[in-house]
Image (cartoon, rainbow, N blue to C red; front, side, top):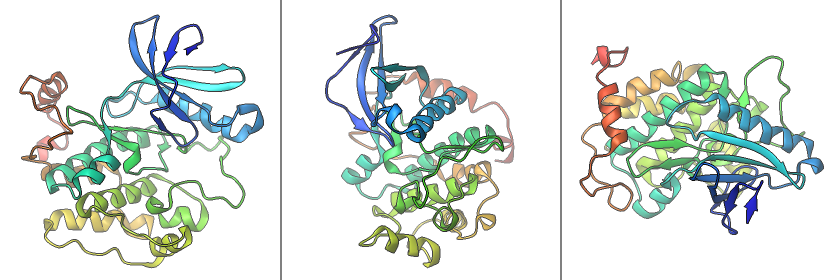
Length: 303
């Protein structure tokens, strides 16, 4: 299957995002692998969904960070929108948890801290993800984390219309902050709550709240106290409790605050067989990050 006289696509999708199917592809012009995401519903039949899809592309174009996929192209074929982006090797955190179960504390902290770094970049650009969950976090073979699927993201700018459907909550019930459930509002603190749900799941192997219906899960997010996790370090217990506070103002000040609390816990990471490159060869991404990590900043100077 050839798209736009340039991109060779595999027929079967490799996954689904918030609004469309994702195919593995090959850019014949630049000789590189790509991922191509199609809008699930033709844009001319749903202007709101088309608008969200275009907005996701503009958001990805703003993010220039290793932890978010790079957007290469946006186009239309037969009245159907598509995005062409960087192909990210790895497995979703959902798959890691399904196979591995609860993660060691250093790995849970490392994945959450890397996610905080991406959120810090996004929030600085007035972007809120609104749908953080294990399916949207990709663990790469080098141990890095890529945050996927900004399809529900909100650009927090006054002149941008809100993309919501009347009477419909946008997001995934198991990871939605109380304020998203109660009044549909989402801000940086909502992303930190969702990441807190993911962190709790990494430490326990099970979603924070479950129930027979979405409304049963919503009720727990709004009213129920998160169950404690025995045996985790006090510092981790403290930051997790703050991330899962019901009131946005009671959560950490920002993603940088979360990162500062989590980073010291991401040390002496044990092997994760089957998920990471363990052939003993140097990993250029780690080599690069090791040097960058020696440059003083507010975190390194505080250690």
